[in-house]
Length: 144
Image (cartoon, rainbow, N blue to C red; front, side, top):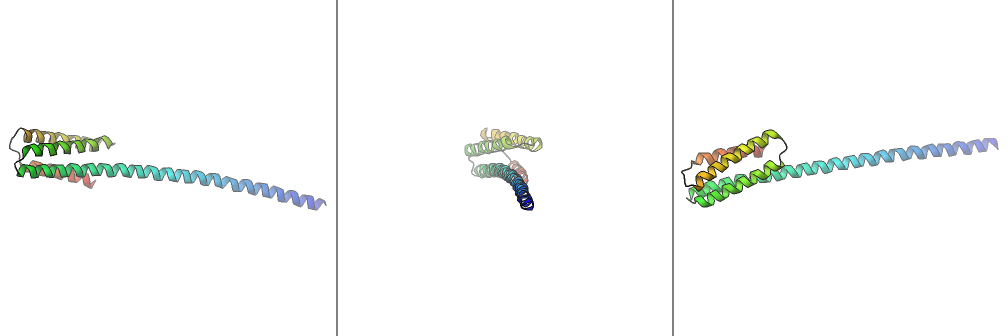
């Protein structure tokens, strides 16, 4: 009888320890899954931000190309509007940029586009090379 009670107690203790041991990894697994899902969400949000910035850069570049085409068509008013829209797109990129170095470069580019827009709207002769320089700079930003 004593042997039977000892065996029952040993089985109860092993069941209790097994139960507690089995409970512990579940908590760790739940924490691991939470951490993993948080990392996936953070990565997704960062990728979405990068895609939006890329979209604004491409929009700015297309506006500059359209402005250059308007200059060829001798339509300065529409070219000035396109350049203003390019500036708006680049300002959207600057709002989302966290690093100081690219933001300063974009700010410099925005200043050059505003000067070009002023020249176009005042009816001054504008070299097409200025448009091409801005396009090349925008290409560099897009490739990053």
